[in-house]
Image 1 (tube, one colour):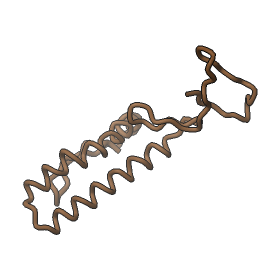
Image 2 (spheres, one colour):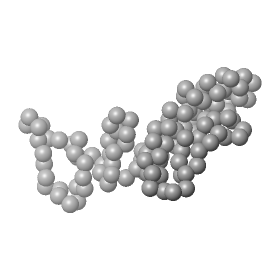
Image 3 (cartoon, helix red, strand yellow):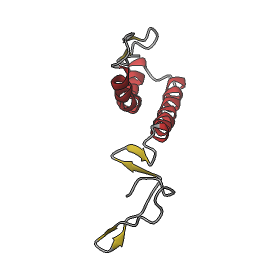
Image 4 (tube, one colour):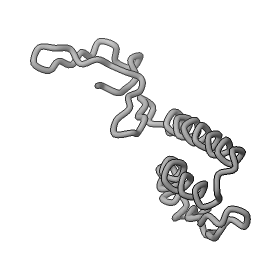
Length: 116
């Protein structure tokens, strides 16, 4: 995998053991989408899509009259890990901001660890 703009240096050809290294625009490495421009957009879009799918299923479970305890368990074990992988980045970015909030959501009782 070689990240970088093809237009800046199209003649650059790297080889490893005689095999050319493919130049790509984006690559998923350890669950993180890395792009040649080093922007977060593709990674965040992927996380939002995954979280939306899981929240939709949570809504279906609620409509099926699943107990609140089971819904909370599903949220904590399936939905929350996806959203927290992005939250760690947001927490890092917010360290420079002065207005930080944290608390518990009034309806769900789920803790909010994000600092804005």
